[in-house]
Amino acid sequence: MSEPIERVAVQVDRLCWTGILLGLAFTMTNVQQFAAAGAAVWSLAWFAAWLLDPMVSLVLLAILRAEQVTARRGVRLGGWVRAAKWFTLGATYVMNTWSAFVAGSAALVVLHSVPPLVVFVAAEAVTELRDKLGTAAEAVAPAPRTSFAEYLAVARKARKSSAKVSPAWVREVTGCSRGLSSKLAAALNGNQP
Image 1 (cartoon, rainbow, N blue to C red):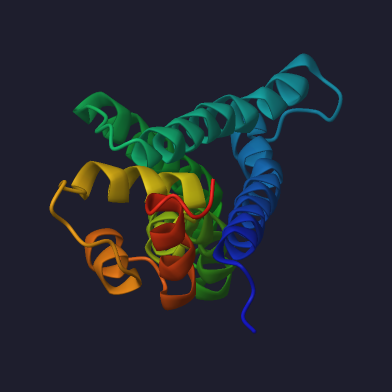
Image 2 (cartoon, rainbow, N blue to C red):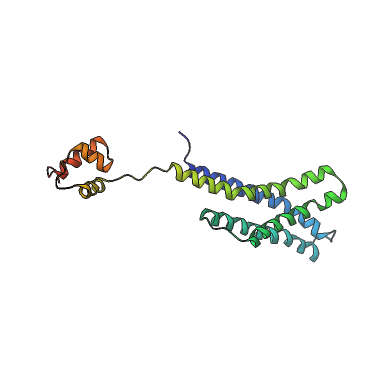
């Protein structure tokens, strides 16, 4: 038996967000080095450089979370939101890879490109994944069970004074099962409360 889609959706969501957070944590040291630009360790400039990446990353995380929630409710966000997301992702990428490009090292460019690109791709995918898993869960959700009283009310409403109430007639007007139709017919004919 396959896992419930809701459980898989939670796992996918957690794994994507964990990957995004780890990617942003990796980029933080590179951005700090970029921003510190050789400032002495423990100096004010060195400490201030640690603020740049969290500033960008927190804005990005806020946008991603808002996108995820609004997408579930079918609300489209404006162009500024998309621009802010792309700008924060782009800024993280540039600050992470700048020194690698300056050094002319293809290996460093690849090393410093992978985490921000994973964050970028996951950021684009996480909202759609959650939305599609939600749609899949709704598509396979079992229909709520109809109670005896609800079937009885439908049959009473459909009954005409000239109608001969039989299990076959009850099944025809209510769509209930064969076993339940006998009980409903008996109730309608006054043989059962």
